[in-house]
Length: 313
Ligand code: NAD
Image (cartoon, rainbow, N blue to C red; front, side, top):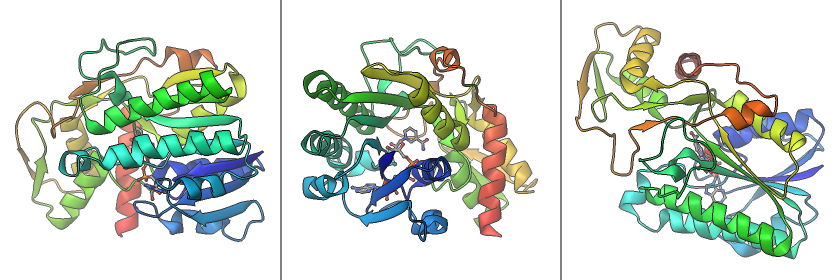
């Protein structure tokens, strides 16, 4: 299959590409390298199956060019930093909502059939029952990033209903693992490498969320796309359990061998404005497809701490 991955030089995108190349797809990437890294893809650069297009999903012209001759788009490009939205308030509008409009519109113009969209658990907002099933609603996100993800879902659904696209919407839990470039584990490892005697934790540390290894995440996407064929398919992707930020701090301190580190908490029930303190997705629908995760939240966190540490040695 001829596939386009937007944001393919990023953390999740580069793992997805490893899988797509391994299953003999022809893969094109559009990425502006704003948070991605060309090194994540350098092992494919000489492959005849692989093509890199340095472009911006905020430009409709770039996306029209990138979608020519493509059968399926994995739309992963976005601003990955929820906190940035609080400083530059049109960030998620441009890089989330408008970018997703550009992708589905370019697909309509170039008659590309299928889109897989990287959405997020944050679309559910903070009052959802836990574990949250896919049919919970109304979805009322509390961050600008979450608003743009929900808008993106609406655009995918609109283009499915109006122009006959096929859509897969994947609401990710917190995705962690090798090549992570952001997130709580990444931050803790970097803080402890800088100063092994002190670890500042945002919030009171009681935030509790579910973490999924990136390998499980991309395998789940591909498994669901090969086993489910509705016009619009909405799936939560996560693991079976949660872990608190305090426990993550403990694990990272162990892995960094920083046993003298004193933990300080900035206080409050959340790390930043728009953060959701507790989240756990129902993964029953994913499990019904026959896919199961290999790692618990704790295993995924420990594995991430080790791989981040390795890159610093
Ligand atoms: P990432 O930052 O590693 O990857 C995003 C990629 O998109 C990067 O390579 C970046 O250079 C590229 N990009 C950003 N803006 C672009 C633009 N305007 N034009 C072209 N390329 C652009 O982030 P990630 O963690 O791999 O996230 C991938 C997707 O999954 C994102 O849509 C993110 O919102 C979503 N998601 C991630 C998580 C998580 O825990 N990592 C959770 C929920 C949803």
